[in-house]
Length: 361
Image: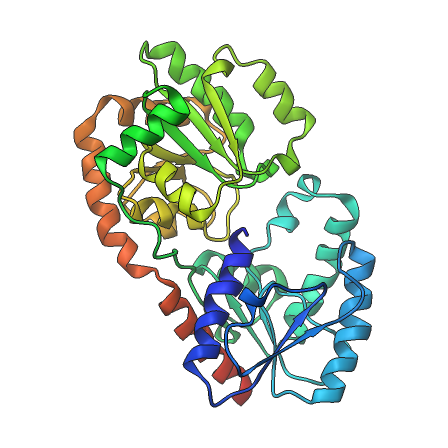
């Protein structure tokens, strides 16, 4: 799972177990795994059709979900990804994580972009209340959709408790497995255009041209969005042999790979929150991240902030952390303080508060 998936999984798992006095209907669009039915107060329902295309999203929400809500008459429909049925009379709470699709339309398939930009303004106005994952996104929703700020609740993401510092022996083992024992910078995330891997590849090449050491770049994530511009940037690299692709990793494996990294380099040009920032802090790993959108808010003073469009700035930050152990330790210490502001327990509590407010609105 990626950000929205973890948000739904971790927050709803806590909400249903913390509130056994309430009944919950979990609506799936395909056969579900039993791991997603967290407690006996959940009734799982599978509705047709599987939502694998924007036209099917419309059918699913406006026909299948609307019919189910009419039948069961729940007090509230909660959408962890912001999509809600516009034809229902049921109160709706939409979790709108960010509005990246407004600014970077070419980063997604045409029909998906058209769906998002047509329907999300309507979802925002239909919802009795909105939750989002950062103050940045709250202000962005208010600005773009003219939603009163007192109708929007900030419900920060958290980090899995699995992410903790790893032992020196684990660090050595991971480095021996991935990089023949050499240190490495790490990127974690989907290879979506807005994750900015094109500039990360260019910045790493520049870093290597200025540093004679054996430091590598490890990329963790799915190549689903591997597009022509990304292939061209990678192919043009002088030091592409120093880049290691792991594919997607299990949380247990990712924890070790993250914990053994020299630093996390996470420089998207748009982000609603950026869960890897908090995961790195929990693992005791310093962070380089972007100075745009939500990332300065989430990282605060516990990261080196760079312009994601500046290859020089990204490269310079990598040089600083590669060459300056005391700076790495200072960022780790600040991260140990900053990480305390984020947890899935806090997420669930704030989302439950938003639910209660929505029921009163």
